Length: 184
Image (cartoon, rainbow, N blue to C red):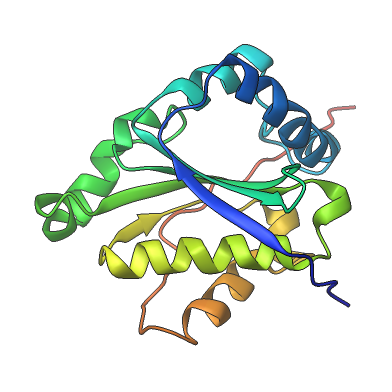
């Protein structure tokens, strides 16, 4: 059950030190559970987070409640070189037409404070993201952990919401599988 809460979504390129201090606890609360749910590291160190928040190549969609409390965030790199964990060449080689239009972007992460996950704030932010991508006719890359893809169906929900307002094609383009072997 989703609870409707009035949400204000803003789009900014950079956050200053006091804003970073405000958003860090939201980010940390959202990603701390991933420490034990995913093999890849999802939780940035505080300094890494601050660097991303200050980087103008990364657009930040910020959802606040009507009291101004930070509740949800999405980051969108409009320059693939801003994303440390991807290979920009991989995307540039495959999506040249979008690259030529400066419309080859990457969603870094979408998160909501755990207290806001079952509220309309997260959905409002996703709808804002979808509108942004549609209006700019973007080809967008993103990654989803196995946990979020299977238990929360994040990618499927995103496609379902997007298809309400636009046509899109989406496909899995790569997979990295982590293994563990115990030798006895």
